[in-house]
Amino acid sequence: MDKIQINGSRKLQGEVRISGAKNAALPLIASGILVKGTTVFTNVPRLMDITSIRNLLEDLGAKCSFEDNVFTVDGSGIHKIEAEYDLVRKMRASILVLGPLTARFGHAKVSMPGGCAIGARPVNMHLSGLEALGAKITIDHGYIEAKARRLVGNEIYFDIPTVTGTENLMMAAALAKGRSVLRNAAREPEIICLADALNKMGGKVSGAGTPIIEIEGVDSLEPAEVRVIPDRIETGTFMVAAAATGGDVTIKDCNPEHIGGIISKLKDTGAEVILQEKGVRVKGGPRINSVDIKTLPYPGFPTDMQAQFMAMATIAEGNSIIHESIFENRFIHANELLRMGADIKISNGNYAMVRGVEKLQGAPVMASDLRASASLVIAGLIAKGTTLISRVYHMDRGYEAIEEKFSCLGADIQRIE
Ligand code: EPU
Image (cartoon, rainbow, N blue to C red; front, side, top):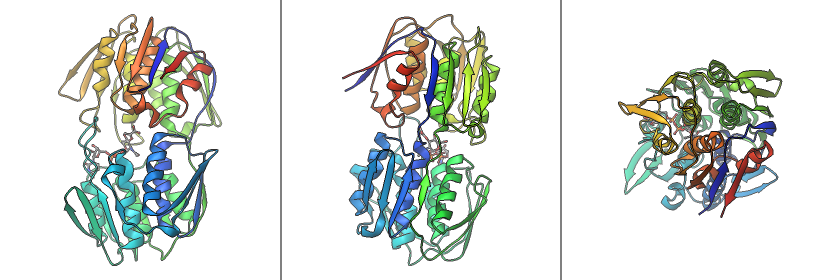
């Protein structure tokens, strides 16, 4: 299994280009199921998760191609409505095929995603939403089965905003008969990207980006070409790495409008953040101030950036309190940071008190999930000596060419096979 080796304590400097967003590309590719014909997605990142959804769609009978960051889905030949355990277990986001399969074929069988390292991650709101649209849902032998002659538009209220739940129901409602209203919907930029795609395909979706999304169902959707938005979490990861190393990095091809929460907290740490039209420059200050963070649904501070900020907080002046409010077990990286000399105390499971220390020391550490791996890379970049990160397959799920990108910024980082 590959490992990443980092010799730390170098300031990052230069320019880096941001890839397309994994969490926007996955629902877009799933939306290809809704269309009889070839839909084209550009700016798709080359990642393990993209391979996973491709394998799943091809198993259903779709024809896919992926070259030069252009991904095509031809949904005409889909002949199977069952997403099998062996494919779904590799990626929880496979649940995104449930809504589109039910909407187009009136029948879907999807292996129930289990929990994962960061939490239980139930899908009850996906299921109750589909029931509200008239699907009969059963759970049998680890599979969710949804059946409906044709889905019928309805009001759906989410107890808490769910990103993939909102996406699943937007796709389902797009082909339902009549009007649906999703209330307390997630507001992430990835939701707007999906709404734009559905509208390009001939769908009628309005209100995406607000808590109330209205969808007027149509009889069919047409092929379209859609560009994936820049990855705001990859953007934030490079911003934190720049600030934490006291570097000066210009991040290109990102959307500064999507990263307000990250910019605000980074400024609080003392970093200088200069906005450009499609970019952002981050200059690390002479010292890092401690900062308190609470993760929240968008536009609040993203849970997917919590681990990276914790890595920076380990060397801040003073104490930072980090409150993880989205997932119940998203502090696994803290134990690895402790191995590098950090001072972190977890209380009540979802509060971390990080007391800044002068320096981290390189150490062998283990990644437990995607964003935890990014946190350990940042820790390795700021630490004195050598850090060896194992289980980097977690990172390959969601960061395109990460070691090449950090190398170009002057980091001493390499993959060891
Ligand atoms: N939840 C329920 N019931 C549901 C659905 C969600 O209780 O039916 C809970 C979850 O357990 C969690 C909260 O609602 O406590 C929010 O979860 P959400 O459904 O929004 O998460 P998700 O859609 O499964 C997406 C991203 C995650 C990201 C979260 C939160 C994708 C493919 N995944 O997950 O990304 O952390 O939203 O922003 O979009 C990552 O990229 O590393 C990653 C984990």
